[in-house]
Image (cartoon, rainbow, N blue to C red; front, side):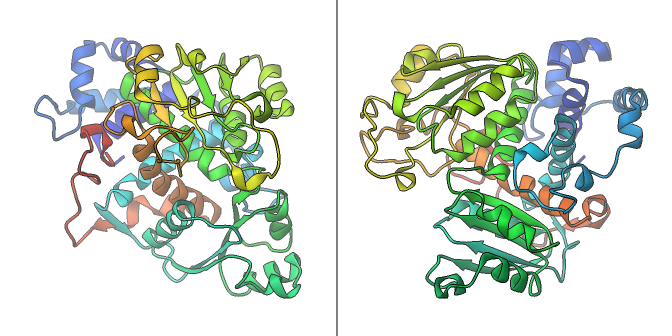
Length: 426
């Protein structure tokens, strides 16, 4: 772990303990634990005694030793493989234990993502970025993650510049690209197309979005963000109340996210959308059959009590001529609504991009300075999570810690000018 705070948060996550329960387990006051968890720049932060750190390490060791599955499990890349290949095509490839292990690897990546450390374990490797659909955040995020591990990126966007515009098959394109690069990240407007690309090659392939299908890396970074936010607030994932708002029919991010959230226990889902844009029935059934509570609504007033509000924009590019009655300018997550019905510690998220125009039926910009808004912490977390995915799929995750060195340039203490202390990449 890079810091005392990361070490303690990871310990609470592994042990599935709240701050109060963790303090009791350590035999210290809650206030003492809180000072150990404060950012190092805080005037009230305190260093954890060496004896306490050894005690936490011993607890974690005994906990791990008590689970044979954790002592003798197969490598993570094998457990999350697709048909035996090191590829991430769907979140259905992940179990809860694998997801938590991936989060621990992302934690190790944090000092690299913060621009504090440099690592070159993928030096000489080349990533092919095939985006047959417009993208800014996802494409750049994957490229930055691969580059920060020492690799290089070959980038292409759109059908116009692709040989597929000349009639080349997906199989031929994929097989040819596999001869040029060491990993492929693919976005395609047609559901199932990325899986077709993946079947034509044995190199790592990551699905960066296939039409209205899935967006697995986005859902993983969303889960990682929720975990880190809950850790800061002393909450557990099990039993959380998650509200999803907006276009739940075509929003691929929520399709992947509800699958991952369903891996936890005792969840409550409030799904709010116009009646014509409801979550697909098979995903509602999946969550319900896992024993979770699922409520479907058309009213934003039902955000009440949610621990997380996950808003999405309307996916206009996914359909044409369909009725979207009920999606009016009033259907907007704005500060007055949040203040009226949400809790002081509700976490507000959005996969971006959001429609920032006045009156748009999306997440309002009047929440930009509200500390509950986590969208930029969310995007920041995309780098360590995608670095972790590359490291696992390319088999270098165990080389990271011993290949770190300090950066030679000055990195900012805060990424954005309006960031709060916990908005940094700490």
